[in-house]
Image (cartoon, rainbow, N blue to C red):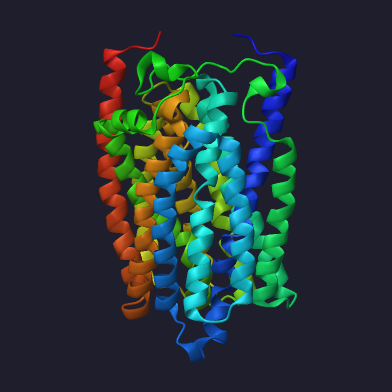
Length: 431
């Protein structure tokens, strides 16, 4: 079905609103990473260390993962926009609460609430995307949507690091983050639409290769039990969940620990380390655009091939962090940081983006996304707990050796997933 000029305009508007809205989530998420060196210095009399921050982020990530399982099904049931906006307002309130506190238990409680609220956002966007875009463009569209958490993270780190540099203090950083997200909440509330039907247009077709067959390619109502029953019986779905587990562990390690690593190992000032850490999501943003475009051109097995190759090339970059001793001021870890981001984040964006839309169609895309992301963020728990303890007790080299092993194991799973997709393509050739 050919789309009207009005429909194409609204698709661009919807894409822009989702990108900017979810980027706002990251202003209220990257803030803790940026101020971690300051918190450790200011509250060392309370016993705050790398391990303390790691324990706090691990516990909050666990709640974030559980929220993903619930949020996906909720979005499929009540609508993506409602869930997306709920996550925004919850994160705003929790960020303000964090800024008003001053003890480890309250910091932990506030961060748990914040991550739980934020767990709603991505599944809401996937649900909206399943209504607005054709399955033939899922890779490119979700690659563009993924810019929200990559370029959004990059810009958030630049913005918040500058506030820190200007002497605002960690509380001011948190209050500014909350105010920024509040503005984006109002914009999304006024202009974001759940479906083209709200502007009098028809929804594009969903993926014909989804787990639900023909019923999943068109809009229809289904119970949470029916959707989950179909999804959880799929072996290839669980393979994608394992990929998400490994890749998310590596990604969340860099999101959480890069500023502190650059401060302690490379010798950068705290504000400079915060800005430098933004190169990770910047390189990742370029990666998701390239990978998203290529995956739509390479056919059914294309996304799996890109994931496999990306993970293989991530391994040597992680080995640089694990086994190379850097002199103070060395630029090599910054180059390695960009390499990991470029090789890893494009493939990562497929798992809870285009692949979730492929598997879930219009019927259960948010549910698939929620489970893939939820399992992935169980790996994110280890990025806080395990990496924090290893870095504190045995040094950063041991922490990155562990990550290298994780990447190798995940690459093996990716190879199996690629072979499965190749066999599926041969059984069901592209029409």
